[in-house]
Structures are given as structure tokens and as C-alpha cells.
Image (cartoon, rainbow, N blue to C red; front, side, top):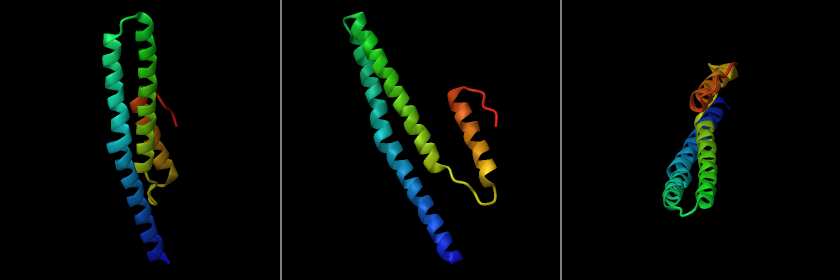
Length: 106
């Protein structure tokens, strides 16, 4: 039973890592590249109204990329049996605080 549990844990960890890689190398990169296209369109926009709408779209793309990055981080994070939930939570809020520029207290 212990061996089976260890194999299951390793398989789950490998699958989470695989999914994180696929999201990072696939969807996240494509969405980020759309942001650059929107930046070009905004630079060439003929009216202020179009430019403002494209800036709003760029903001949404940036938000989606940030959400994807958080999802990737969640998939790559694991709770080590020796460290426990407190250690994992501490690592998580430290990473989120560093990325967001916020001061996070736990």
C-alpha cells in the first residue's frame, strides 16, 4: 500500500508538471503574443477612441496572462510531507507577493 501510494504521488506530480509545461509553452505564450499584436495596433490607431479600446483589451490580456501564470505556479507547487501546509502556504504567499508587488502577511 505504501509503494502504491508513493507511485500514485509521483504520477500525480509528473502529470501536474506536464500540464504546467503545456500551459506555459502553449496557451500562455500565444496569449502573451496577442498582447504584442494589440500593442502594435494601439500604436497605429487612428483615433483616441480606438487607442483607448485597444489599451483596455491589452489590460485584459495582461490579466489573463497573470491568471495563467498563477495557475502554472499552482500546478508546479506541491505540499511536501515534511514541510506541511504551513510551509507551502508561506512559500505561496511569498511568491504571489513578490509578483504582485504587494506586502503579504501570513
